[in-house]
Image (cartoon, rainbow, N blue to C red; front, side):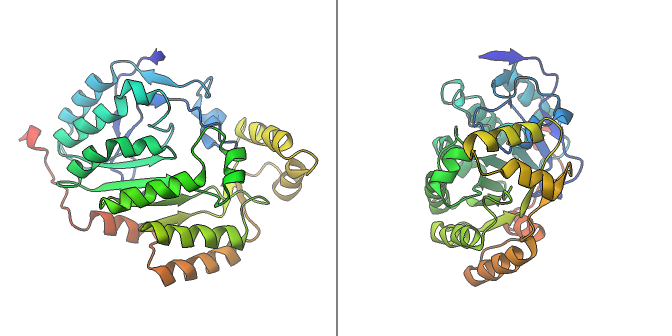
Length: 297
């Protein structure tokens, strides 16, 4: 494992509009899920050797100091740039020990992951939710395991992630699905979207946050097109993207409006939340985030 220097790890978010996160925490850099659509490959993030996972040096000491210095508690988000449950985490336990610190300092946690290793830390999540909000966001973009193996080769297949949601929900953890990106020409079908909603309902998931399309930036675009040509040879998918979207950043599915209508109807039928404000209100409803940390009084 290679380590990279860091001065701070728990940083204040510019806005809490994204799932009500007050702070960000990325313990690792890079990812080995190999998802063909990953935005973190974009040039703007300046992450070299993205497929090589690196840990931040002295991460736990830095996180402890960061949390101790915070004047206000709040919800700490992790998983935005790098999945906190990569294969190395099984031995390194950095994410697990970071969660213990989050618990000890009275903060809440919001985790985004595709990895079933999250279930290992169920005991800590249950401890945190006794005093602060806990939110688990599981990315699922296709109900088809065969397709998920192709586009997310290093991650557990979709059916395993649905099973994880069922276990989280069964322990009272507020959890749901990030249905994004929904890849144009591959996943943007009514059949796929409605099947994800149906299976989410079966697991007890509380929400699905969806975006019917994807974003493409420099370097990410080239990587994605190369992978499309490798995985789906002869289908001309990269050419279809260029013809439809050119070099646009936002590649919204041409079916987005129709899919959104069907998606929201199905969510309402099952009582699944899909609006960001409603999701934030629901998972924070039973908590009052203290204005001052006990460690700053």
